[in-house]
Length: 615
Image (cartoon, rainbow, N blue to C red; front, side, top):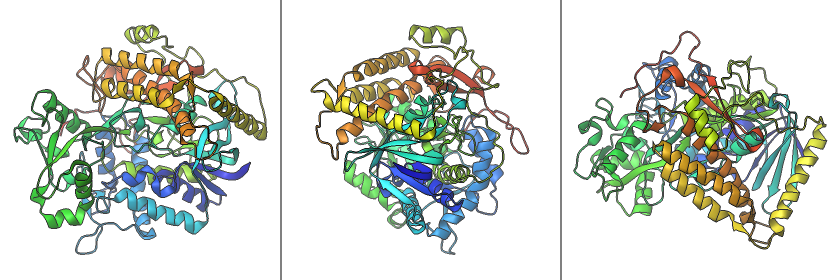
């Protein structure tokens, strides 16, 4: 058994920043990651980091843009914390050696991004995430922070009191991919989940194959609610053949979108008369798919993104990586011809419910980054707001887990006095027909035995449970292959829980998710080896994807309105009277419960009043 004060699960941007902060606060800190840190998916982030750094900009403007972009479903304490902390944390990165692009006078470059009222996206070419990872990994190495890379975290070691708010996280159970051994890692102060997004729930995604919602699922099964999971961002510009991301920086630099007829449709078709290609991502994605669906798409599949007019000097200086991606994956030379693009699953606005210090309702368990929902992004994330979230809330989670006083959080976690159970009669019928609990009925996650055990006993029991599970999976001679279950799940999610959603399609997807859960009961691990057994790891990941896909689909089914990235055919307007609230899903012993929590629109000095969101 390994022991540390703070254990960080995941070594992307949020995990590295959390580990650095915990170490700075005096904690013996370790990172446990299924990937080497610089292979984490943060490295695929291209666009930049939003921070109010220049004269004429300020954090209040950044906060307002973020709240508007969230379609008024973000929580003001989180949004204002992000906007206030981002400048200092971005400058700290520069002091650590982050090679930001610069203007001729030496100042750090900033470019316009969608939904921003000021060009505040700070960038390093079109490889901002790559440089961010390397910069922070250098700091981890410099500080001597222990990194257990290629260790896959199978589960949390959490006590099992009936009420999740009474539970404590004592550590994790992890599988050493190299040797095949399973060990417990004891955390004296806390565990921070920084495991990234759930993009592999879809078959067309900008996410890496490692993005399997592991943190979401293990926290969810431990009793932590998942918040606003229905809000999935589809990036407007991914390459059709692979889903590889083409940065919003192309449009920020002046790239234009046009359809098969040569129309610059964002303006000419009235989708965003003021901001055009730099409207919010949900607006642009819907516009592109509308063009395709109405017969104006290229090859009935995609539209064109053109940057030729920017000139080779500017492209090579600021967007060179985009040229390589277009050439390698589509055979297109972006200097002389337009690039084909279409929306692809990109980001989860929802996630593990946390407060602005990264804490969940389970004592000693934290989350930060894309796997967490604080809620900064609400119903729609603005481009350039993901990387500041990593560094701001990764830092705060690390400090708090290490014992640093950050003040009392304003955002409540767990099922409490402000929770709402009523879903409305129509939704209750829908959930009842699906065999699901329409409300918590007094107990959010009553799967604990109520037995009290010390930390070592909780950890030993968790380790033994995973060892037994592995022996069961490895001991079977035949059954269902996890890859078949995963492919079935991904097809259903891409078909029915995409940019455009219907009640019929969501119910069909939910039925497929439940079929996948049934089929998974007969899953087996085909690879008999005990070392480097990625088949075993991916079998675990597929279970996590099933759990996360169910919460995404359930949230989309019950939220009967059109808000941000969530478009419902049956309701073509935002409904603030009934739906200005967060959707919460709790595990409840495997029978998910739906409940709600009010959005916090009261900021530090003002209240954010919901307005019509137009660009």
